[in-house]
Image 1 (cartoon, rainbow, N blue to C red):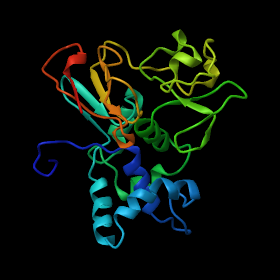
Image 2: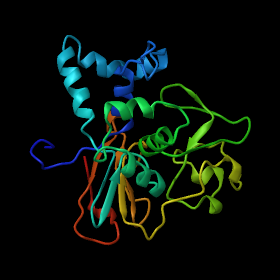
Image 3: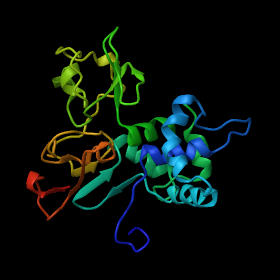
Image 4: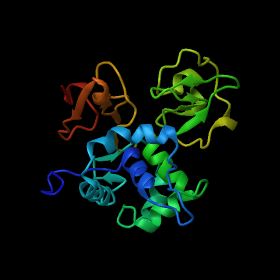
Length: 243
């Protein structure tokens, strides 16, 4: 569909991680370290390409052609998070909204502006949980940070209500601003924005009149979801199509 120009595919964190897992560092090793955790995350993909090395490398080259975001007059689309400062920085830095080999190497340098912009755009915004709290994610990894609803005003939220994932142990108390990496959020007057990434459950529905996540865990037996946009200014639940 992309080749016939009937669709636009966007880069997500899995495609980016695959590139970094493949790219070798000049001093040895890879940009995404071949730790047990990372190898396990890539195992199923690598297994599909057993004895098909050339095809795997062709896909890696195709990943580099994927833009990191997409915008039209009436809507926006991104894998995990549309933050205006990050998107503006990436627009000025990327090559036609895409990564080059050199930019991939630069993006792997922790703490740089490019690293942080790509990390939030492809993986979402996170914040630390209150001292002493943690949870175990779907891969069995111990986490002390939560993915947050970047479309909500953090000054009006609690630790529990701002978390994308429903974590019972999170307290219903106001957020400590010092734990936030940024106070910015996506306002209700902004364009409609569609994204994935968050492995939602239950019946698909927009979060807000201009906010819609389309990832309902199809890879884990959930729903394959799309939104049929018909020119409406407010997102409607009935326009979500899923199987």
